[in-house]
Length: 467
Image (cartoon, rainbow, N blue to C red; front, side, top):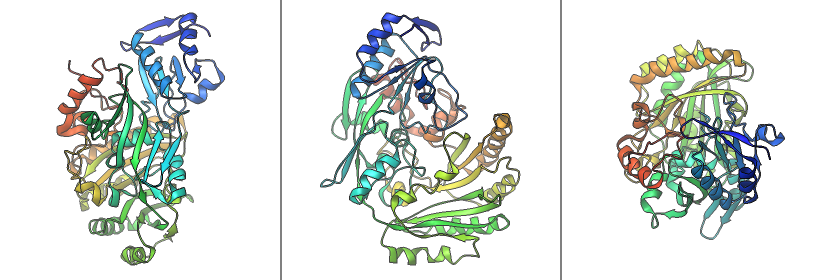
């Protein structure tokens, strides 16, 4: 192993000598990757093709012991650190330039306890993998709307998903976690052990350590009614107003997404996606009003297994495409907001981009805002624009299109966003970042002071310590 230049937390460059690297690597089960090695390029690549960063070192952890040693090594050499779970992080915080990337991609085991209806999963697992295991027992918990999203990042930021109407967020279903904190210690946290840290993990992002294991509450989830309705974009205003009214008066079993996109055959369309998490006959009755509205171009709502529902949005978000997302929570969808979105979508520069409302779900709003670090319990929807394109030369026009829309939409939102969708503009201490944590920010700073006083874990929606 050759000596390597790496970047410190202070953004200075130092050289790690061969003997130092070999001694470090000898204490690991997983490999240490450096620039120039064959596996390095694949390891540094994440879902968002816009992210092109080159860590000085990548530690592909084989288990918690490797994570502990990587954290100790980074701390002792004051290295810049990033943490990669499932690799579906929109702003690309999972990959650092020049520093040490702690990669959990090799840690993906999942164990289901059918009797107690719980599952324990390692931090590198994706929701596709998690659902594959839990659905073998007819069980599931709230997971992301795109199946290759990592369980770690989604849960730590809150965790919106199709089952949230009945079962709450992913973080609401978290029972326990194993966390390697900045001092290299492993803390097993739950409502009874390190309760304050457990509170902070549920919405506080990756600020407090590397979570190597998550334990979730599972629920019986069988085949249910789900699918899409597509309408011509000329009917967008009427369809989105109907969607607003329908989604504001639904039972817990229903959750929805609606927005503007381009169909595979190149037609701009308005789409409503819906799932009914309950008995099929009740679902037929519950979804009858939406299926009776207008004359859709497509209605593919029908009985589907949960794993298929979880893949509904995968085709719209393939790995490797370039993505830029802006988002905010909203309490209601106004006619003026709908008019703005329809007008702006008419100027969309890429057929891969979309504008949408994702419903948080009834059960989410019934949880106390003090129960978890995720406090946005009064929000009814997350509004977001996902600008997506393939040509690197089109970066500027697609990013600017999304930014302009987000700025225009600001008056129609609650003024605070989802931790998992914060972009690079949400820098340490900025108003945008503080608003994502809301009134919990100072309490989270106190946790940061306790568990990461030097801000070793800073490549995230960062809460800066104040010690």
